[in-house]
Length: 365
Image (cartoon, rainbow, N blue to C red; front, side, top):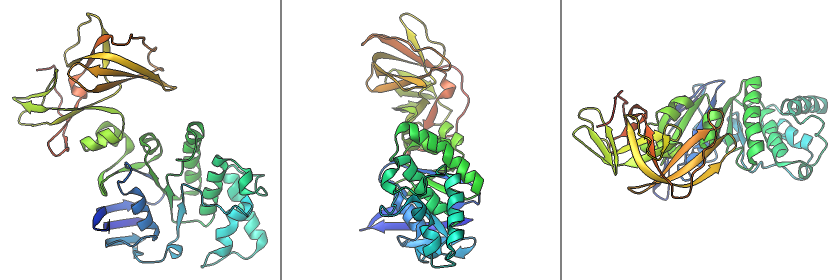
């Protein structure tokens, strides 16, 4: 197990990681999500030993490795740009770590070839060992980079946006493959990404990093269903967020009126893209949340369609329709609609942006 205790790091007086504590369990897939500039790469470099923290500790199986050199930590690091040797074959790239590591290098050529062949088979590259790096695709390069790291049997494998350079179809396939490979080896994966869908789909647990702080650590479905802060809700790119005020048990944002728990002062409300029903013409909304809007555009995204509406009181609202549950709808530009959803599906956030524990409510004020 790897433990981070009150880890901190600043650059030119600007905090990059702030008092971060985390336990990375054995044999788990942990994903780290955060926007650009949140400290993701800095945290990874601290864990790998490429940067030194200003404070805190890094423990590996109870042993302090905070200032231990990178190559003696027993960790693997898969970089986004692959960092392969272009003058070597695939086989030589994968075997490089075995032959050249400082502790217990493998000097028997037959043993190196055997282990390399096993690893290439595991990552789906059997038969490609003799090719040069320039002769294989981007997805194959990613697998070579992964194989080169995993062949040394690291305690924890750090992955820095490993799918970021791949096209959408290949990224989806590699999402499945990475989980299979990790499960086959029983190695802990610490996967850093700026893609919310990737983080949710791949992790056993998920960390959301914001301005160098771990603002939420939980199962991906918990993070998705109940973002801990309004900023997390925005990071997930799955929620409409409304700013407003609350008074007398009512949250108000333009023409939106929603009941809030007694004594609660909410300043933001969030509802998932797929919760709203789109009502045309004179159709009457059910009890709950209802706002007036006009149709702007729609976007087909394979398994779903996203509709964009402009609120009568200002701002944009997105509505998602999954094609597995309903057919696409057609709207005219500027067409007026009412967006209606169950009030109980709304999450509320206080003045500091923190989630107000949900309370089941009925109807609208």
